[in-house]
Length: 257
Image 1 (cartoon, rainbow, N blue to C red):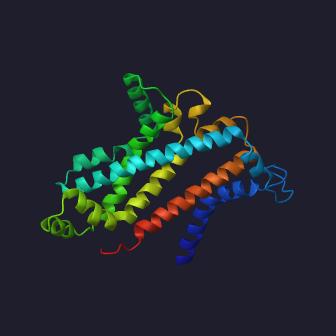
Image 2 (cartoon, rainbow, N blue to C red):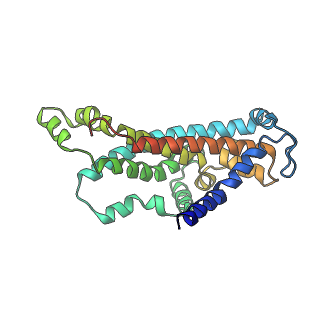
Image 3 (cartoon, rainbow, N blue to C red):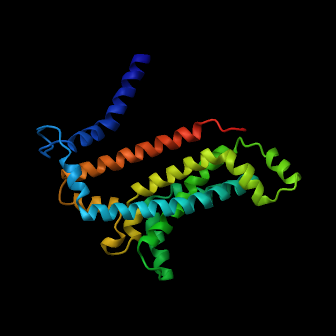
């Protein structure tokens, strides 16, 4: 039985990651053909770095990811602390985590309709606000998982000694939950970098608000080229590093806990 389970696990990993491995290998193929290997080359990465549209969309994605991560992490962390300190409510929890469950296409249409109703100009600012909406739920979930085992008597002791609410949060609560906050921020950054559907609906027209996933979609409609393989490889490796870092931080031991 253990051998059968091991074989099943190996087959599952192969099914999930073999296509990714093939894509990464093709990004280094000198010929740029999916059927013939002619040697190792970094040519496609050089052409990728010289493509102005790729560089511009990459910068847009970075701006959106950084700004939305900072806002979502701040709001999500404070929201998690407030929720954990209040009485449990299943209805409230369902409402908080709804953006994680709602299909992206539904959330994208809802956000587009909301921006249109407010006559809000579509662009990078609308993409950032849209990413903040769904990232808050993920940040809140990660931080709340840490707060489940948080010793709230430390907060009470700080308040008894005369510290105010802000000082207590800044000096006591935040340092103890900081690994979880950083893990949540890394997760939010990864989700923002990779997100396509919501950005596509809320970006508006023009290259100035085109993110990297949108640029990849625009290029892939004319066929998969070696540059796309190289770009996808960079995005995937960045995503893997960020997700693994977030998981490691969230599992790590926290001083004082």
